[in-house]
Length: 428
Image (cartoon, rainbow, N blue to C red; front, side, top):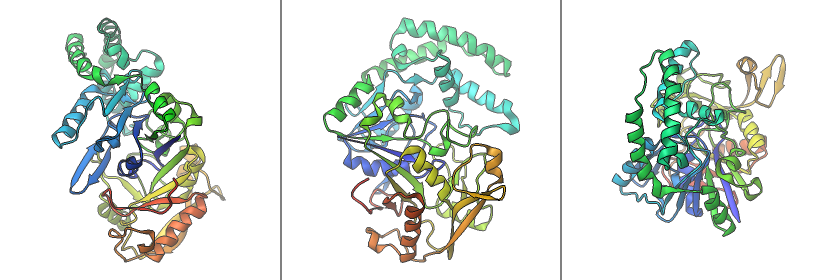
């Protein structure tokens, strides 16, 4: 039995899509357990690039089953746009390759409308949401007025719930200065989605449980990153779901004892999008250089990412919270060409040095990074295909990551393509 998690160990954008695609070669099933189409996973295979938002990255393999679990919020319009996009690129997407949980909550037009209106109302205190309706949909889920996929498939149930919700949401929409939504238009649109969705819908908890019991290899794919977790991230600048390994059991419907490994994906430097404290941020020419060389612009939004030195305090926190058994370090090729590199090994807070991530944003904003300096490397690493081919200074850099976090580096990414991945250890 082997079921392992792949998740982001920083603020997202670590290269999870590429690494999930790479590790999917060893898996039979790939499962998304949280988030929605606010995720952006870019995968490059040979000369083609694929941008995924909602569908698991294993879809690029013909022989893998892909599962959208109950912890995901599903926008049917976005789902079918992505399916059509993949089909046009020659990727097969059928109910034999993709299944959707009947318990997943559905993103409705009023979720997207409220997302935009509430963000506008926050003014300078905006969170930086993608505007996809993710947060409002999770809000309805917790408030117990959400519409689930199983509701969508029962016309009378869907009609009753939608009518009640639209009446309530329109009052809120008008209060925020928006135009009220029309029931009939939404009802008919989503009935059409329901019929197209029906063949893909299953009780995915049963599907995944049975696959694990059949000794199939199951890969759980996280969206966003650990520091965007609703509980352990830089609240309130977080997403609305549990992005840590603890989110798998609830987001899929299997017990934690069925999970064997957890792999954290981390860039060789640190990036984040939107507002919030960022202790190692480089607001200078070096930060700009990393951004341009690393193409640090969002897959979903196109927004430029803030860039900074590698923060090992973040990685140590991710190891602790997520129970990581190994780390994957990506984009080490981006750093080639810098004479000197810095790595954060602690935060100075109120005269003391700490090695953990504080809960309070006010405390985090006061944290001054404590750095260790490393010699850089000029060697071109994008063509390296074994650990031995990496420059000595790059190996020292990776060794520091292992020593500080107490966690082995199992894979090193030297470029965006599937084959630009160096396996350091056989075990994850």
